Image (cartoon, rainbow, N blue to C red; front, side):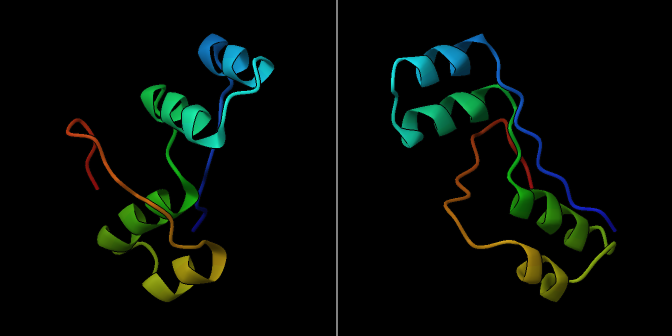
Length: 73
């Protein structure tokens, strides 16, 4: 089962990068644009019974996975 992480650089993110923004600022902009971390995608697939937590743990790491009110696991 493939687990994906795609980071599309939109105008906001491009501007932040070109102005030397912090990772925190860039990550926030990416989340606003719909970015989904690798682990988040893997955990959704665990909940759907498509893979195991052990497999997700082997290809990703735990990070701050704060989800906005609009987001769901």
